Length: 284
Image 1 (tube, one colour):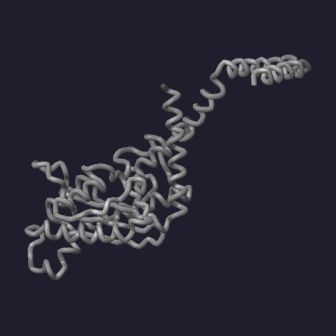
Image 2 (cartoon, helix red, strand yellow; image 1 turned 180 degrees about the vertical axis):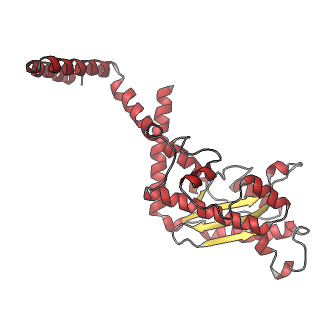
């Protein structure tokens, strides 16, 4: 069972490296996405959390498009009305604009995100919320989604940063947390109707994701992973596949004997070496 886990780790690590290489090669097609929403823990009736802000940043150009309650509420058709009273209308307009953007980029875009992977928080949650409001979402294919959080685990192991990992990896790499709100702070900001603060936090997180991806691709990402966390799987796989086998055990023992013979009697090493060579040729 342990061998299967080692093979899985090595394969996942190799896949993550290939993904990072692909994102580097196609950086102009890469869109870094993050969004903020109402806390799903506060929804007593099971209603999908309402969206407050979405940020989409092109990795190649750095240009960012954002869609937020704060911005949409300023449109003339909503002027003079309390955003909280007509939240669904404003949110529907926000999502109209967002899915227009997705539609424009759906053919070639590769979407990099941080833990946006289920109906609680993720693409599915945004799509479902749009359906609830009467819209028809553009579905992003799963093969075009890249979860940076999971890619880091695959690349460096689970101990690459403490929890919460996004804040932790930011601190390790000395990335500024200006305007950054934690999940708990975002929940409070929503209750207090601080939509501008939520918008700024979403923009900051899209920027953070971009900085982390750039650091990884350039080879400058710092983590708390130890050497064994990163290379242990490969070393263990080599050990189990090539060394810890019947022939490998015998060969290892012979090499130890050869080393001892050479230590005590340098003139005899050639005879032992020839014997070892014959043994390995006969076992191939």
